Image 1 (spheres, protein in one colour):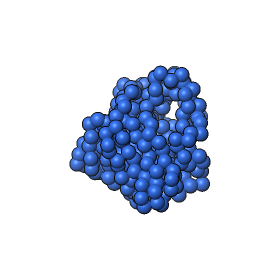
Image 2 (cartoon, rainbow, N blue to C red):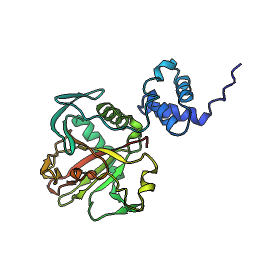
Image 3 (cartoon, rainbow, N blue to C red):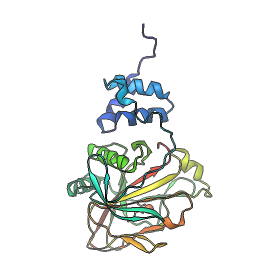
Image 4 (cartoon, protein in one colour):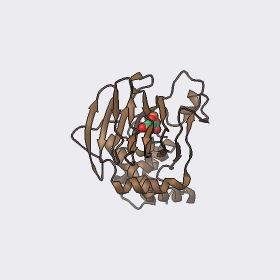
Length: 276
Ligand SMILES: O=C(O)CCC(=O)C(=O)O
Ligand SMILES: [Fe+2]
């Protein structure tokens, strides 16, 4: 006799949808664990719903929830379905320029998918709410985690490149800048001193790394500057800049420089220390 509680239809549907969106069985089990399911039970449920042998869901399921990214190693880093060129490495901030993270077609498809949904980009304010911010004049939108097959594929690629589960990522953000538009110098980590810190980090904890992917090549301007170290990364279609940081890391200060001619499209992936 089977004494286990039945798997609810909602849970079954969610597991199937998350898996069809491109997330690995391990990630699905980990997301369940992050929502309070027993690790062992998460694995057996995922295996049952996806009709997999239980061993297929084993890897990583007992890994600690708090993680850091692994910095990609030059010259070529494995990123699942793709090998990525590590064109430049820096120690402080921990930074890599990545060539060919995305194909030209993937860049174009992302722009086309995002275009109907663009709105003025917001920033997170001191109390954890969203605000219109004069420092950030671009328009943008967010995809939900695994929202579309292309989005899920990129999330999986970044997860393998940086050795961090997909569940640690915030939804992919697409930003569009026109001439004169910019993102003034800022940090991506949240300031523990600010009043909204607990709210902002209640889900996922602190941000630990960012990947800014260039979806086109602006005619002039639009690079990503790191003023503390005098570095500007050129915005080139398909390339990206990855940088990792601790809260308080002043060297990770960065800015989207004003576009001088043409336009600029980026996709940004922010990573958290815990499942988000
Ligand atoms: O536009 C850029 O180059 C930088 C974008 C950025 O800093 C961000 O999205 O957090
Ligand atoms: Fe940023």
